[in-house]
Length: 194
Image (cartoon, rainbow, N blue to C red; front, side, top):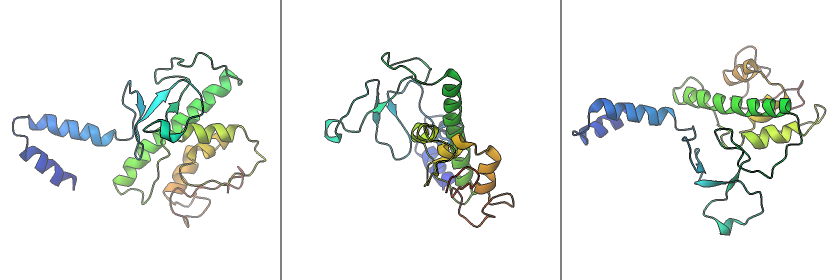
């Protein structure tokens, strides 16, 4: 399908060098899950342009074309909400950030792997990393969590490793489910996640 699209694009754009069209299309298709630099809104599959805000307040959907997305820091690590005061240590903040970043990076790799036919199924959790990692961090290891799609952050925060994710996604012999589940149906008795 992509080659048909490229041929059509090249046929209708003779004034533009072919190399430039191909590289632009390649960049666009390879980065469809990543946030554009210095964007003023959230951008991921299924998202309506949700503008960033640094004011935490209750709103109704009728007040905005898309509900704003609250953030404390921007993508450059600069604090945008000066009123925010952390109530956890720097070490814990760093770990939470690393877990969210891990999920985002895994989404990029596995989304492409699914599109290439290397994995039969994958659902990204773009935009939900903080909700999953943050809520899981507020629970104890004894708390049982019932997860659904797009909650890889819960598993990562609880201690699921890269190997654990890949074993389940590729349904190999090291998968605790022995390959009997569809990809993205994670579970861990040891981590109290059903």
